[in-house]
Image (cartoon, rainbow, N blue to C red):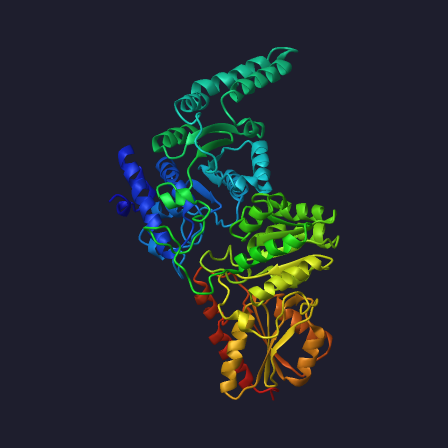
Length: 633
């Protein structure tokens, strides 16, 4: 076995081409087996195995800086950079992260988790390198999906202007390998990257420019002629116009061809973009057939490729949202759905099939998605923008300026709100209540279960103004339909009004979202201790139910707020603001939520226990709080 003997990238350089291909097979199997056990991003990682080997064969990490964008394609990179022995801890608590982390390894040049950051960061590293008068290569590996984001083009534009020796590798895994990825393309790439061609091109330009009067016009004519000829064979004129020397397309699974081209560009003095074609899920038939399913997947059966069912009713909040929106859209042809390259992830695949003309996947372009929705709203359309909480952060200005300032009727379906788990700090959606709540005009809701989600979504489509409907990652609890008092429709959903699920006078829980169900369980345990606990389903993080909070504070001496959001500016803060504004100082308040800091990767259940957000934690916090004296002497 070759992989277990790779202790650093230097060991890769000692292998022959045949041995490198065997190494690729071993790495692929290692990744499949590990992701089958721990879950993770499979398709993209299987597609870049040979690319990763070639990069470490040619370049000298960590001196040379390799940046991975989005970062979920870095498993092979981790295997070759002193983390093979730790690979079994992937995405586990205190194990290695599923994304590059600067504090995890010196070989991770830049932390990534959200897409399209690599080119801008790489350019910054190059400028810092030159200011410090150092000498090393900087390579940004970016997926074709990430190229749909404006940030990537901003970086490309600036890099072309600065004309620094940035190497960008465009990993294209959406199109099949076309005919020009073969002998002919390889031939032209050798010509275009060869010293003879480059010297001839530069010297010819210099000679023509030197001709009195005719030099400038002739040079432009020569450049247009060169681009026209290259355009007959190569699809990279767009990148050439941005100032990059384009190379490709190249077969991303041909190690020898990759090495050959990387060697040629290693000493480049200007920006270069290498277009590499790879196949998502390569080497595992189930991932090749269903690359979207295996993009990010939980544990699965290696032999069948079938996901291993977790606990719960069998339906996730994302699926419940997608089904509800599809049903509601049947009655209202003004409803449209928008996603940013996450159709399956946000549960919109059913909507897309049912209403293809009312579904928009704008690619990894969250700011555009929001402003696009704002434009639709001005025409009386009802856009529902489904984006993960942690990705919606990227469109903050558009939410504030383009939607809320104009008070437009846009519905934000904020998926993966709260603790997400194994993907770590870049993906835990624990800031959205805080970054949305202070924006005027927006309403923020969170359902406790799937049934309430449909009621809230129906209300959101009727509300005149911006609405954010946040909900967590994971399965809906199987017994959540047993709660009493709910009926179909929006009769129980009134803006800013909470519901009392359990009466009591000893202590009151005011909980948001799915934490309501855990607070109910905690209240039942408190009752066995002789403590009569009230439980309130807040429903709204903005506006909060001021009247109910005031009424509760008048009869219950202790209030506990519960939320899966940072405590800084979150729902608990909103309750405290109301009590302060109404000068209700005769009540003690305890806020349970996420402390000030980023959440590391671990299972959701572990993290909820760590932060006291599981049933046990809520119960113990409330019990301790109840036993504290009301007034300190």
